[in-house]
Image 1 (cartoon, rainbow, N blue to C red):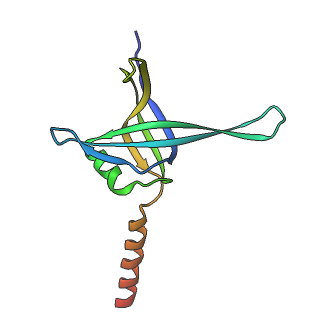
Image 2: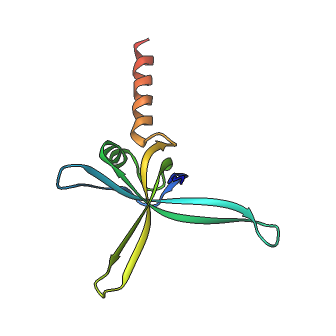
Image 3: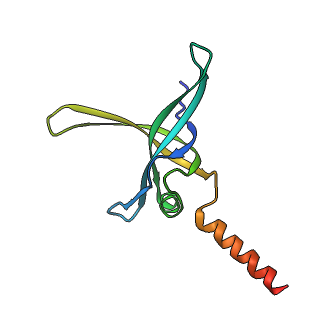
Length: 128
């Protein structure tokens, strides 16, 4: 039997990553991703639908996400689906599907990086 659990998504963060540590000190970052898809509607007009996805990143990748990612930032991620099920306070069974990120690629520079590079360039130009 063939088994494959792979997801590739490109979208924008819906909220800043929440960074925490496990009791053993492993970093975990939780954030939301909005993935939009365009299509032609019944009347021929362009339509857009958005899927909101919860994402979790672990270890060094989580630390980097917590440091550099912010709400609205575009990312490309590769990961796998993870299904969780639990009982709430009233005894109802609840479930959630998340993406566990294996790789996250930033699609734009972190805000501080652009300013630092500009400052470095200005310093070099002044020396000339």
